[in-house]
Length: 71
Image 1 (tube, rainbow, N blue to C red):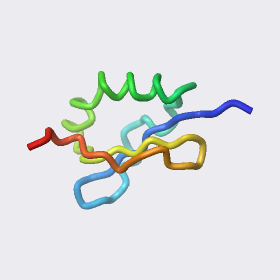
Image 2: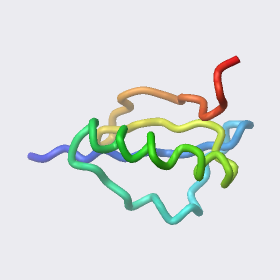
Image 3: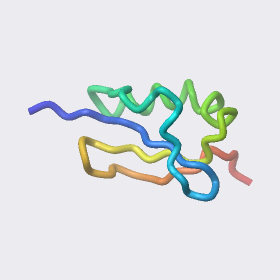
């Protein structure tokens, strides 16, 4: 059985964002998912994403994690 890693996206008020066209983007490993996020986080933030959550199949790995810079 192979694992699939996906990101879910939410606005600052916590509502899920599903219209980014990324819902079907899956990654074969946590490292691949995190590498993609490290390249795309600014684009996601510009699109209104405030937090992301990493999931492995149906389980939450971590999150929600803010895309805002640390103070």
